[in-house]
Image (cartoon, helix red, strand yellow):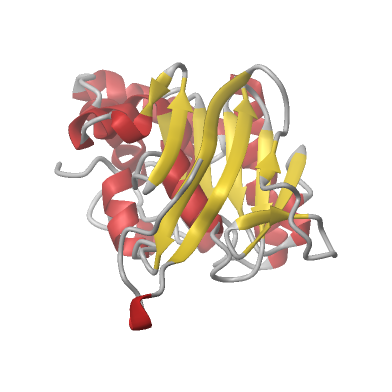
Length: 264
């Protein structure tokens, strides 16, 4: 597919953050996307999650083209089918842990009592029942990230997107968090896409893809891998082929706000 950039950069040059790449993700798979800063990792995650629209190509999820959906429909899809874990958890500071976890359930239409019961069950599963009424400022980084994982999984998502989920944690805590994330997702059948710089974090996933300059490359060689990442067959979500003009790599805060459901 021929692709052109959507926004001019200095000198009239267009840079592609995603350069005609294809990607498939099957149910229950876990995929780590590695690469240096600016390689397109987070842009790929945001395109897969419907947070941004690629300037060309398609993002197909269960037969639906996310890039052709309205902003409102993509917001509804993120609320019902996708879970998100960010580097710093992004919990709402004014809410206790149980209400942070219950929030996506209530946004999906569940009544408060039922949502809280579901949230308590997830906190108990992660050994956090005693922190149900604690606010994020009263928890450690590892505890906050486990609450964020509980929130991501509480809706029973088909896909969990994690952008540097251990970046703000020490190594031991980060490994514990990754074990919890991948183990819980595997138990529920959710697929996982993790963006990371850390090979030890990537090792928790069943597949690793490396990006550089908007394309997938062979690890260690820097040579393009045909622009094609196929962790498995029977794809649940796929991008075919996608490009995204840069410097439109979205601001982290904007992406986080949109992922949490846009206008609330």
